[in-house]
Each structure stands twice: as structure tokens, then as C-alpha cells.
Image 1 (tube, rainbow, N blue to C red):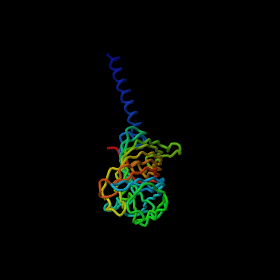
Image 2 (spheres, helix red, strand yellow):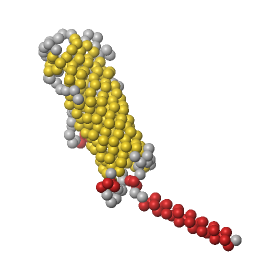
Image 3 (cartoon, helix red, strand yellow):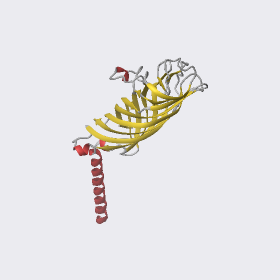
Image 4 (cartoon, rainbow, N blue to C red):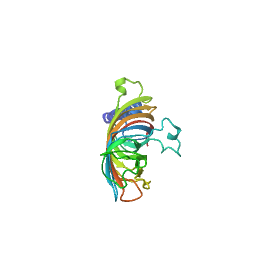
Amino acid sequence: MKQSFLLVVLSLFFYVQCSFSQEFTKNSEKYSAHNKGKFYFYWGGNRETFSTSDIRFKGSDYDFTIYDVVAHDKPKGWHIDYINPARMTIPQTNFRMGYFINDHYNISLGIDHMKYVMLQNKTVTYSGNYPNAESYNENPNGNQLTLDESFLTFEHTDGLNYINTEITRVDDFSHVLKLPNIDKFQINTLGGIGIGLLFPKTNATVLSKERHDDFHVSGYGASAKVGLNFTFYKHFFIQTELKGGFINMNDIKTTALNEDTAEQQFWFLQRIIAFGGIFRL
């Protein structure tokens, strides 16, 4: 009887000791050491660079292509509009929210609000036909013409909206730098890939026709990114990203007429800085 009682007491003792040890380890472990189950979101701004593009314009009485078109973004700079609720969609912005499925990988949904502006008054090569040639100050000469505003304006400034989903890998770089307390400050590296749809509001004037001024699903895109994440006090972070990809838009609405469309393909490169939060429900 005494031996049985002693065995029960020793078993309880070891159980309590193991439970205490596990709880101590759990409580002493840094919050930032694990990401699984955490949600995050961020809001930021970007600058873009675009490759040249061949753009084809089609309608009931015209079909022409302009080649090696140069385009640029439309930066706002450091501006209050980025945090003004009434005007925060005007600058070039990035919004994303995601969920960590394990400590290293998260899935997310976001919108990259870029802006694409064709360079005006530039001489380009073209092919095809359009009515009333030489009446738009485009000065056709052989297979070249000038992109005068009377002939053509073309921009995605409301904007070049890339709605995409991504899968991203995140790795803690703090241990390499031997940071003493990652719950106060942590550095992570990240890399990811994404796919999505283009939902621009294109501002175009083609041959002096009335422009189309509504959002329209115009094509698709794919992208990849690398970046650095700087997390402060477990829940707040600054994130920098270098993100590049390919866009194919084969159904761009250009005027109020349904038969008037454009199509183009190009590469893009974004430089992003964003501010966000990370938390576990």
C-alpha cells in the first residue's frame, strides 16, 4: 500500500514538474519568434518604372498600332493625401492584408494602385490605318507620327489597379545580427510571388472621340517581390519591397463606344514603402 501511494506521489510530482517546465518555456519564448496564426495589414506608397510597350487601338473605322511607347508614373511625393481618408486613393498606393499559415509562409490579398502615363509629343513608329490622317497634328511621315494630344492621349491614372493575391515566405534575420530582444525590434527578409487582375480606369482620347471613364477588367498580371520588414514592439512594422512583374491587358476600354478598345503588354518595377500592423486574434 505504501509503495503504491509513493508511486502515485512521485508520478504527480513529475507531472507538475514537466507542466511547470513547459509553461515556463512557453511564457519565456518571445512573441515574435512564431508567426503562425497571425494576421497583418499594411498601407503605403510606391514609385514605378515601365518598359516600352506596343499599343494597338481598334474601332469600327480604324485599326492601328504604335510601337515602343514610353510611359512614366505620376508621383505625389510625401503628401498628406496618403493618410487623408477623403483623398487617399489619389496618390500611388499599396494596400495588403494577409494571414500566416505557418511560421514562414503567409497568403495575402492586396491592391497595387499604380499610375501609367504615355509620354506625349514623342515621334513613334506606327502601322495600320485611321480616318482623316494629318488632321490631328500627328504629322504622319512614312511609318512615323507624333503623339499629339489632338490625336491620342492614353493613361491609366485612376489608376493601373493590380488586384492580386500573393504567397510570401518570411525569415527572421535577427539571429544573424544577434539582436538581443526581437519583441522590441526584429528584422525579417521576405520573398513572394503573385497573380491578379488589372482593373484600371483608363483615361484616353482617341481621334478626338469621347473617352470612356469607368473601371473595367482589362487583363491580368503576374509578379514577384523581395523585401525587408522591420517590426517594432511585436505589432508595428515598416516594410520595403522591390516588386516586378508582367502585365497583359487585351481589353482596354478607350471611348464611350463598345467597339473601341486597346491592347498592350509591358513589364513593371515598383519600389514600395509601407507601414502596418501584425497581430494574433
